[in-house]
Image 1 (tube, rainbow, N blue to C red):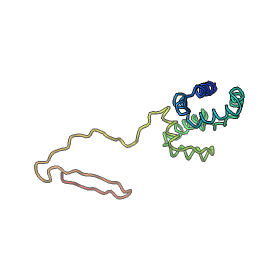
Image 2 (tube, rainbow, N blue to C red; image 1 turned 180 degrees about the horizontal axis):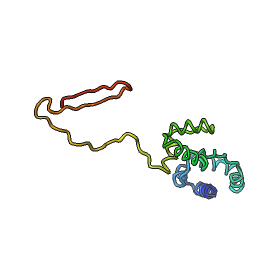
Image 3 (cartoon, rainbow, N blue to C red; image 1 turned 120 degrees about the horizontal axis):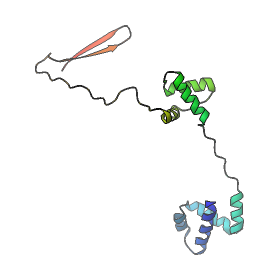
Image 4 (cartoon, helix red, strand yellow; image 1 turned 135 degrees about the vertical axis):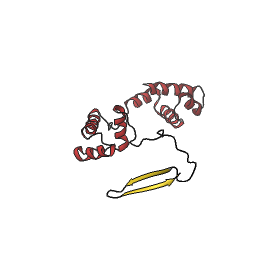
Length: 157
């Protein structure tokens, strides 16, 4: 009903001599829309155009992809599979239910119920770094596990 009021106001403003661009700015409607409205009002008359406009078939919007059942499935998969990640939930949904959801959508669903954080702990405060007064006094050791083999590195700080 709001558009019917805007159409009527647009026609009244147009009849009073206000340019179409100014009408579009005032009503916060695209300028091309004002041109179409006025052209059709001139063709059919105001009342006939309003009748046609209100009876016109409007486009059907697509259904929402997310419903309560889908959200509950995502939550259940998360709880059953030891807090698995979004990628695994995506695979479970496609294998078990034939549903394709993006990983970001799954994380949006999980973000509504859970507090999500990265498994990598970022920006953690570390202990003080020791200062060495002479060489080989402080050595930083790192270990990397390659399966059956460990690699050790030592750096003189």
